[in-house]
Image (tube, rainbow, N blue to C red):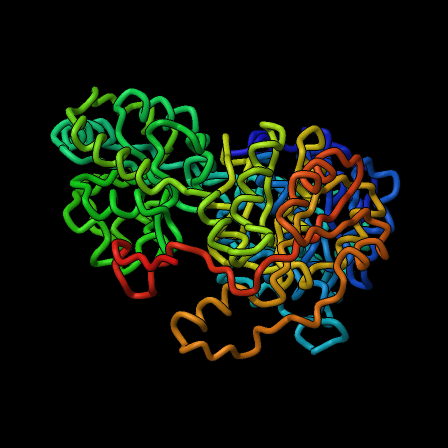
Length: 573
C-alpha cells in the first residue's frame, strides 16, 4: 500500500553484533524501514529513546500535545501514502494518543504508534504514569506489541510497518518498557515469517458475473469510497468510468477519486450529499460499490438505500462484504486489479445519463442567489471555499476539521485527487485539521496545504500554532468563526425545537491576536467585499498564516437528510 510496505530491514541490521540498547535498535530499525520523520513528545518512560535520538539521522517534530503528534502522523500518511510514525511516553502521553489511534483505525490510515512504558517489573502495579495502553487500544488497532526483549525490536519494527500498510491499512501500537529500552544486547532475533496473502480464488467467475450485471443494467451507478485511494485504484476507476460512461457518486473520503468537475461525477452522497447524487442512488437499478462500506452517513435509513438496485461490492476487506447490505456479486482482494479486470463494454444508459446530468445542472449551486438571500454584506462561507479552492494551485491539499465547515468543504471545494482532501471521516474528530495539515505539509513540502477549521474545532488543538512557528511550517489556515458549535446548533435548531444548549461561543478570543501571539501572521475578514483580497493574501504568504473569517451564526448546511430517513427526504433552506 505504501513505499514503506515494500521496504525490508537490511541484512546488516540483523548481522551487526555491536552492543546496542533497545532504544538504539528501535531508531536504527525505524531508519532502516524507511522512516524519515517522527512526530513525538518526550517524557519519563520514553526518555531512553530521546537520549539516542540526536545523531540518529531521523527528523523529529515536537508537537505541543500528543494528540497533535498522532494527528500530524495521520496527515503525513494520507498526504504521502507512506506509513506515519508517532512517539509518546507512558500514562497520559499514551492515552493522549488514543483519539488519534481511533481516527487512524476508522479511516484505515497506516500509522505506527510507539509508546513508552514503565519498567517490566512495575507493570501491573499501578506505578506512576502506568496505564495498560495495550489493553486500552485493543479494539482500535490492527495489531499491537509489548516489547519484552531488545533483541526482538528489529523484527518487531519490520513486521509492524508491514502490517500497518498491507491489505486494509490501519494503526499498529508498540509499547516499549523503559528497562527494555535501556537493556543492551548483541543479539538480533529474526521475526516470524509474514502471513501469506490468500490467493484471489474464483475472481474470474465473479468478474464475468459483474460484467453481465453491468451490461444488463438500465440505471447503473458507481458508489465509490476511500478504499479507491488506499487500494491505489484511482487510475483504474477513472478508466472504467470513462469506458462505461456510468454516473458516479462518492463518499466524503472518496472525493477526488474522480476530479470534481468530471463529466460523469454527480457529487457526494449522504446526509449532506448533493441532491443529484442522492436521487440517483434512490433510483438506480445497479449499484457498483468500490472501496465503500455503506456507512450510515452515506446511506441514511439503510433499508431505503438504493431500494431497487442489485449490488456489486468490491473491497479488500472481506469482512465488509454482506455486513450491512446483501450483495449480488462481490470482488474481494486488490481493488486495483479488480477494477482493471472489469471490461463490460459500454451499457445502453443514455436515457439514465440524461436524467442524472439534467438534475446535476438543475440543482447546481447558485452562489450569487445565495449571497443575495443573506441580505447583508457578510461572508458566505460556501462561496469563499469554492473560490479559494479554484484559485489555489492545482496540487493544493485541503485538510479539514469537523463540523459545518467540513461539509461545506466537501460540497464546494474542487479536488483533483483523493490525497488533495484530508479530513476525519469515520471518527469525526474535532481538532484534526491543523495538526493533520502540518503533517501533510511536512510530508509534501512542495504542495500548498490549506487547513479549514471552525472556532470550536481549532480550540481543541490550537497549541499546534507553536509547532508551525517553531519549524516555520507554511500552513495556510482558514478559520470560519460563527461564534457557535455550528453543526450542533443546526441540529438543535432543526430537530430540538431551537433549544440551544451549550453551543454559544460568543466569548471566543480574537483569533488573529491569538495567532500573532504565537508569532504566526494573521488577519480578520468580516465582509464579503474583503474576501478576494483575503484569499490573495492567504495564498501569497511565505510562512504560516491564519485568515480569521467571521460568518453568520445562523447559517446552516443544506441539504440535510434527517437521521433515520431516506436519502430522498432532503431538507433544504
